[in-house]
Structures are given as C-alpha cells and as structure tokens.
Length: 195
Image 1: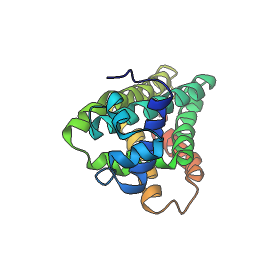
Image 2 (image 1 turned 135 degrees about the vertical axis):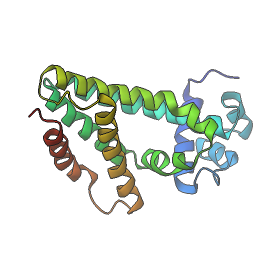
Image 3 (image 1 turned 60 degrees about the vertical axis):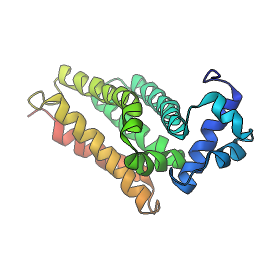
C-alpha cells in the first residue's frame, strides 16, 4: 500500500469529500471518487483498503486541518473568554466554508458502522481535548465555574456547536452560520461565569 501522502492521495481525499457529500456514503462509488480525483480506479486501492478506509482517512485529514486552524485562532487569544470565542468562531467558520466536509461530518458519519465510528474516535477526542484546554484555563483564571464537571461543560459546548451546524445543514443552509457565533458565545459565557 502506498504511503498516505502526496498529490494523488490528497486528490482522492478531496474527491471523496465531494462525492460523499453529493451522493451519500452508501451511494458513493469508488469508481466515481476515482473519476473526480482524476486517477485510475486501481490507484485508489494503492492508498486505501476499502471505502470505509477512505471515509476514516478523509475524516482524519480534514479534522486535522480543522483542529489546527482552531488551535491557531485560540492561541492568538489571550483570555479564556476570548479563547472560547475563537473556538466558536473557528468551528462555524471552518464548516461554513467547507460545506461538503460539514455535510459528511453532520450527516454521513452519523449513519456509519461501528468500524468507522471506532476509526474516527481519536480525531474527535483531539478536538474535545482542545475544548477541555480552553475550559480548564477559564477555571484557572477563575472566570469559568469549577463546580461543574469538565466532562459536562465539554459536552455542553461541543453538543451546542454540533447541533447548530447540523441544523444549518439540514435546513439547507438558509441562514448565515456565522450569525450564531456571538449569541452562542454569550450563552456559554453566562452559563460558565463564576458566581
């Protein structure tokens, strides 16, 4: 199997995102992914074991970009409150500008089999750890409540962001996702504020 790097690998990943977003995972044929990537069908199998492996790999690649972008924005902010704002903005900004990836994450991965869910778990865990770091800093700065378990706060933040994007996708993106960033950040800050 070829190394998972290089122009052809990236072309296949990009094509897979597009084809899966347009057709759904179950109707996304490997031959169509190959055609969109402008590679021979057999080339796909030099990089991937199966269509499941393509979905898992594209999630790792694209989620890695998403996390790097979020981390860069967060690191530029100084306070925990500002870092939380950048987390929200980054989440919505990335997915609203990468609509096909948003569709894959919010719709197709929800219907996936246990092998795929297991395969993407580490990438999701990395993002949840980024949320934890922001929340823990807020607790250290005494601006976020420390009487609520970190696990609960993480679920509240991720669940809210995730549902906002899912609703946006399922309603045919009828509103600007970015308009939700400020109100959601305000809700988080008021809910987490130390009493």
